[in-house]
Length: 151
Image (cartoon, rainbow, N blue to C red; front, side, top):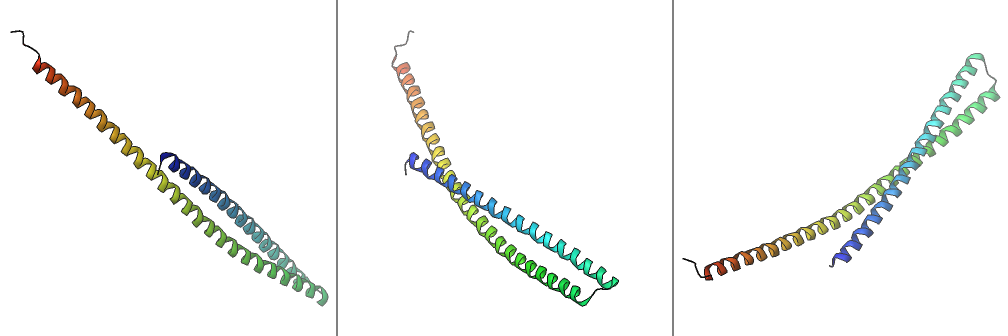
């Protein structure tokens, strides 16, 4: 594989990883919004149930009692749907997390391959330089030995 092809694959892997990261961030934000909605519903239900308890202590007519109970039942249904939505969103977050990790592993693999190639090129260059240096030293020795001595 040529260096250019490896560079292209690395860049594509980086883009895929970044896109997966953005998707993961979006899924996490959605989960946080659902949690906030769930907490609001829970708080509202507690407040409304508190109002019903107060009304019951002070005396409440059956029609008002029925309305309170119906509304609390609808809040309970909304809470159940919110819990289900949160469970589903958490599954999407987990899938997105796994996808991001896969893309990160792919990128790391390409980076490792590129680093190995760079290391191999450096070693080959060092060997060439060493051979050239050895050749120069050998030539100097041969010229020195071949030179007539002045004694």
